[in-house]
Image 1 (cartoon, rainbow, N blue to C red):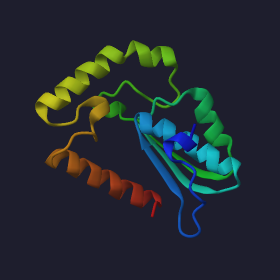
Image 2: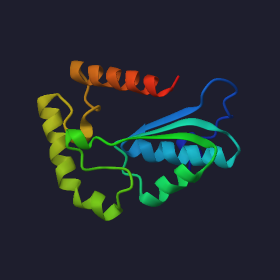
Image 3: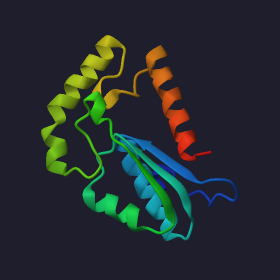
Image 4: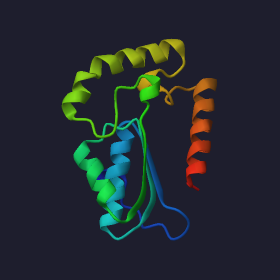
Length: 141
């Protein structure tokens, strides 16, 4: 449940209410957005990065009128096989590739494929800074 994940806080009272998730975290962000929207709270931006979200759940967040903007950032151009709207079967099928991308990212100390943003160090920091600038240009504050 969301409560077990610590998602039981009161609604925000000012400014934008944005939820951003990367990989599995994008599923938590989407579920959190639906939770808050069901309680009447508007979400300004829901950002899903490298998200294995199902087509059904993606449809739910897009149809929820209180989630104003849904931003999908697939990392296909970096070789990530995970994308929003994929089936569980597709996710399971790509598990060996994800494992090799994780190993390669660790060995190279530079994010590869699905792990493009997920590695510590100078290249990861630079990539995340570029991501923040991109999201700011999209309107997130």
